[in-house]
Length: 65
Image 1 (cartoon, rainbow, N blue to C red):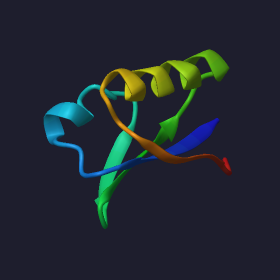
Image 2: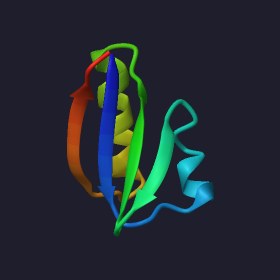
Image 3: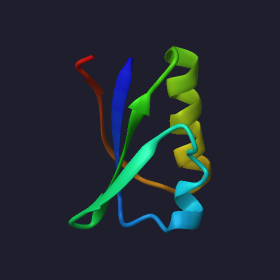
Image 4: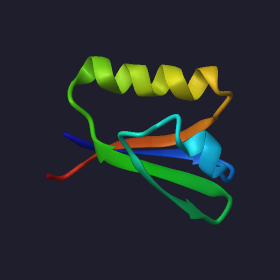
C-alpha cells in the first residue's frame, strides 16, 4: 500500500530523517510524506511517530498502486 501523509509546516532535513522509509517534499507551508506502508501496524507507527515529534497531521490518504 502507498500512503501520503500531509503535515503542517516545513520539516527540516534532520526531522525528515525520522521517516527513512518515506520520501518527502515541501509545499506551501506543509510537508508531504509519501511512500510504501507495509501494513496497518506500520501506518499506526508512522502516525505515532508524527505525534511524538509534535507534528500536526493535516491529511492522510491511501494512494493508488
